[in-house]
Every structure is written in structure tokens, then in C-alpha cells.
Image (tube, rainbow, N blue to C red; front, top):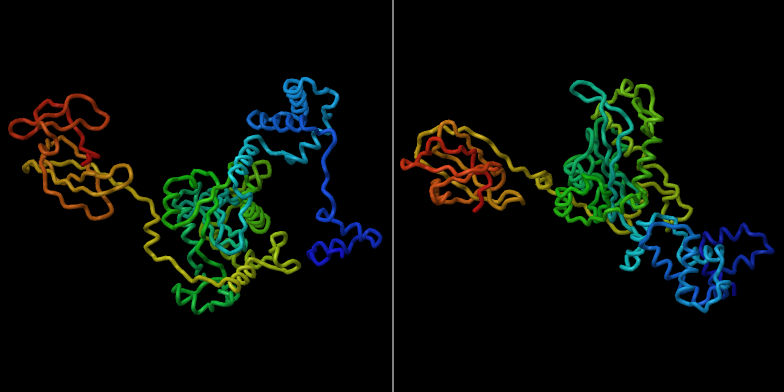
Length: 484
């Protein structure tokens, strides 16, 4: 009769703490009672005024509730002249109704507008993550430990970039970079998510692959080396912030090459990447605070001379973080991040990944080695050569695709030029250029004129009757970027 069969475990646990005389009243939740009809003072005129004021305030700067109350009075007096002013709700009633209808609205104006736009576009408020690799959050932070560089032994700063799986809270990859990270570092980080972590020197059997369903021997045979106890998978969606290295067009191209969906977080909204932000805090309190050279949270908490205390090199710090993730982080019991489907159970990132393998299986896929080269930056090399020859005027031009800025680049191999002339040659590093018949400078430049170099003005250089350059003409530096 009370409908206790529809109550959850946590609800029943909370009801067990209620005194017996109040137990029946505690069972009456909002699903069994009549909905409140509203406030008597909120008439149709007042309701229209409240919605009109909210729409007006959406595009304006943030104002107080007192200013909104005055705008409600103004709207009613202009739109409904016969409405009694004393029937307009007071400030307290308007504030309570505003909070009931529109929420507290404690955020900044730009974020409230973006939330309204998302609601109007029927965008879901959150993404439900139910399997490993569905969403990977990436972020970078300055490493709060000073390190020693391996050449001169000076104390330097570093940047720590990690990726965390939002389902299991596993840290499958991390990367240490001197100073700031770059787009190629993030691209390689996404590649490392799909690669198994090899066992390192000094790691025991307790740090080897422990997950059931796929034996360690099969994974080692497939990867070509012994695999450590760290999950690897193919990510589907990547959540990043708006840093320069994450908005770089090269990283976007790398993510498209990998076939990943990009889900950028909102600007100045750390809650969109709450898991990785909390992971940075846990890294600091559980590991970095116990190391020499720790710099503290900010300058005010910094020691007298953390640079002098630095003893770890980049290689030692990278090995230490990898060992700590495999041995401590992956086995650490999750508190508030425990799964909702297992109330009262104790889980760690390793146990959640093992449970996911039992429920949905595990795709044992390792990317090919050529992916490393496809994710590297593409460069256009150029060389300046001094050509001193008296051979006939011959220009061999090879046409080939090289880069997004220019579909065709010219490679000049031989040219009869004046002894003091220098030639800029654009080299195409990738691919085999198409074979094109050789052409002379007259074919390249109709009218026996060679165009002026980039950045120079003046008359083009003319060739004399003998085919050589006329004396006294303006010099040129090359034919860089000549297109077909």
C-alpha cells in the first residue's frame, strides 16, 4: 500500500534513521501528494511581467533582484495601466518565485546565456559515460616539482599532461615536456592511449597485466613485449580545454587522422573536466608534496630555494610517475567516484576496468607503427644555394603536392645564373614528384622577364640576347613558391 517496492536501497537506508512515529509521513514523497497550484499573488499580469523581465535581463549585464523588481513594476505600469500597484508582489516573493522558476542563477551572465542557448538547441546537460574509452579528458598543468636537465644540470620547470578515462578514472597516459607542451606532444599522447605500457626495469610481477578475460601471455605476444598493469583502449571522444596546444590545427588534424570526436570544454568551466582537475590535486597531495624541489601551490607557498633542492631528472621523474600510477593510483579505492550500479561495493580503477571487460569484452587492437609518422608535423624545407655554373640555361621543375598553403611547389635544380646570384630552392620532403619536361627560364617567364623576388619592387630582370642576365639590372633571389 505504501509502495515501498518502488524505493531504492539508499532511500530505505535513510528511512531506517527516521523515528517510528514519523515513518509513515517520511514515506510520502512528492510522487504521492498533490502538486502545489502556485502563489495567489502571481497573477497572469505578474507572470507575464516576470518572463518579460527575465528575457530582457538575459542580454544585459548582471543586475540585482532589486533592479529586477523595479523592472517588473515598470513593465506592469506601462503594459497594464489599470493594474493596482499594491498587488505587485514584494521583493521577497519575487526572489522566491524567481528561484523556483529559473533556479538560483548564481553563474556569470555569459555562462547563463550559453546554458539557455544549449537548452533551446535541445543539447543534453551531461554525457552519460558507461564504458571505458568513451570519453578521455586531457589537460596540462605546470609540474609543481623542479627538475634537473641532463646537459648542464640546471633546475628547470616542466609541464605535466595527463589523460584520464571518465568511466574507470584510469590514467592510461601522461607526458612530461620541458617548459610548455606542444600540439605534437598531445597527438602522441592520444596515440599512447592505444598502446600497452611495457614492463620496466625494477617492476615485479605484481605490476604485470592482471585483468581477467585476456591472459597476459596473449597480450604480450600481441604487443611484442611484457605488458604492465595499465589499461589501453581506443578512445572515442576527447575532451580538451582551450589552450593554444589543444586548439592548434595540427592537433585537430591528428585527431581526425585518429578518427576521434572532439568535445571541447566550455571556457573557464573546470567542471567540464572535473575528473582530470581532481586527478591533478590528488597527484600533488599523494606524490609531488613528498619530493624534493616541490614548489607549492603558488608563489606565496613556495620555499626559500626550491631550485637548489631539485635532484630528479626528467627521466627519473617520468619513471617515478609511471611506477606510482601502476602501483598506487590504479589500485587506490575510489570514494565518491564509485559506480552507481554497485552501492556499498569497493572499487578501484583496475577493478572497474576488469568489470567492464567482463560485461562488454575487450577489443585487443594495437595501432600500426606507421601511425607515429602520420601524426608528426609536416614541414616544408627550403635551402639557399649559390649556383656558379656556365652550363646552358636549364631549369628542371618538378611539381608535387606539399602542404596546405600551396598546392604546387617548384624545385629548381640547375640554372645558369650570374656568379653573384643566389638561388632559393624549395625542397619537397615527402612523396615522389611528378616527372615534368624540363623548361628554360624563358618558358617560366614569358617575355624574357624573371619576376622580382618576394618583398622587392621594381622592374623585372631582363635577359640579354645571349641568354645571360643584362648587366646593371635589379638582382633577384629566386623563384620561391612559383605555382603551376
